Length: 230
Image (cartoon, rainbow, N blue to C red; front, side, top):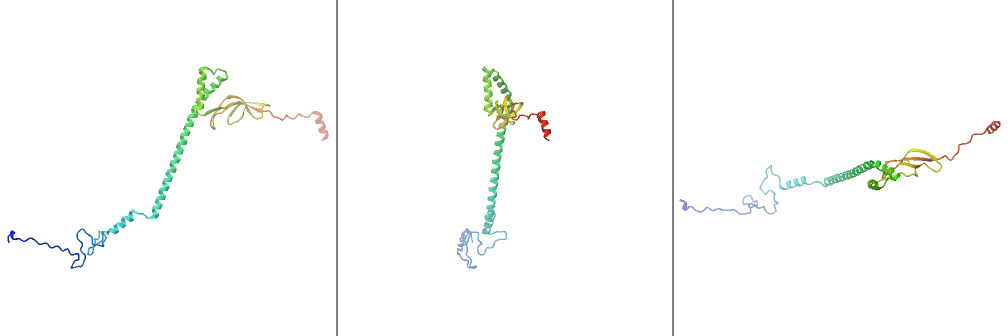
């Protein structure tokens, strides 16, 4: 038979949903039978030993990614404790930095003020002699203004009660005009900054005289009478 006498090939497609031989439900390509979840083996199909059901894979992923409620609470408590510890350490660090910065500033101010004390002594001596006039007075006022700006104040005035923590006694005397140890003469002013004494005042101290007179020695007649009585 020549090629021109060939008849077209007849293709028969069996679209029956039920297999007439096995009685199983047939599934068209790309579809799942009704009532069967995706990933579930169809009747007559068999998984290989290396395959895992989709449901079991999902449960494995969930158990791996998730965590029991007790573990989540423990992890939250640990993270909260870590955050509180870091916050406390940072707060302590800030306090130490502020304290150190303030301490450095105070020490620098005190060292600078101590360098001005001899100049202030010269200014006070010039004031006592009446030489603090003119341009010298202007310079003196500026130097004293520097001490005021640093918060440094002078102390030590004649008539102050003697205080060993504030005064340095270089002279001593007694007088009936005072009732307690008194700084009657100030030889050098003292300086302090707040509660901190930067330099003690050099003073002469006067103490009150004793109110009791020494007992007089008994006379010879009194001594003889005492012996006769014995």
